[in-house]
Image (cartoon, rainbow, N blue to C red; front, top):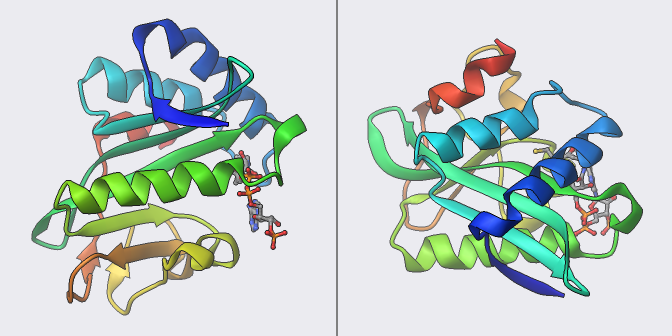
Length: 165
Ligand SMILES: CC(C)(COP(=O)(O)OP(=O)(O)OC[C@H]1O[C@@H](n2cnc3c(N)ncnc32)[C@H](O)[C@@H]1OP(=O)(O)O)[C@@H](O)C(=O)NCCC(=O)NCCS
């Protein structure tokens, strides 16, 4: 399996993978593929990684910029998608580990996401007192600081995420 950055040729396949993954997801707005398209169109995809198996894209991870409270330089991960037929094979973890390594190397303050702590806890993400995202329970608002900081305040998101509002 190869983890690499998206290229223009990948765009249609990425949309297909995201739609297929979220069709069977427990939590889905149904707009995840459009969110990625809108982030891309706004030049707001800080990082867009694909997982390729035998020359075919089977997974995708999107990263955009976020602000926590008044602390800038944070990255927001999501959506993350792996084709249902190849889930539970470590592809999601490989995408996440590569994203975290690249974002750490790029000097980001840390990474945040909205998701299940039972899954994302394994990468070091956790909820923090005072860290929140409007309309979402605090226990699924997670952050992983790369330095010695305490993420506190509201997590911002690009307007592309407002599709499901
Ligand atoms: C979440 C997702 C990206 C994980 O990808 P994956 O390649 O299946 O994950 P991995 O194989 O690396 O990890 C599998 C582990 O994660 C756990 N896991 C996967 N999805 C989970 C979820 N939503 N909640 C809790 N645990 C989850 C599995 O139980 C498994 O645990 P184990 O290692 O203890 O057996 C994939 O399941 C997916 O695309 N889901 C639909 C879309 C979605 O919900 N995306 C996340 C929100 S943005």
